[in-house]
Image (cartoon, rainbow, N blue to C red):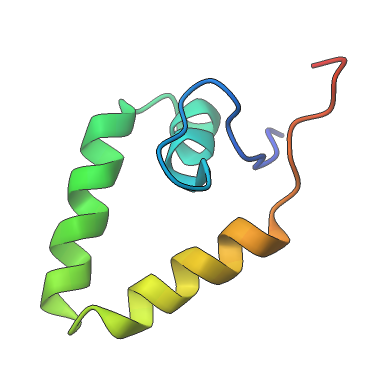
Length: 65
């Protein structure tokens, strides 16, 4: 089972979308576009708060991986 880590190489703000992309194999641009769309539909604040909390909680990728 793959684990979610913040991406070091595909990072724009925290690396959450890049980490989701590496975990699922979906292009990170599509993940970012979906995030923006969902953010606009849900009045921005709930998903933005979730993104910031994920950026703080999700660990970085260990050096050996």
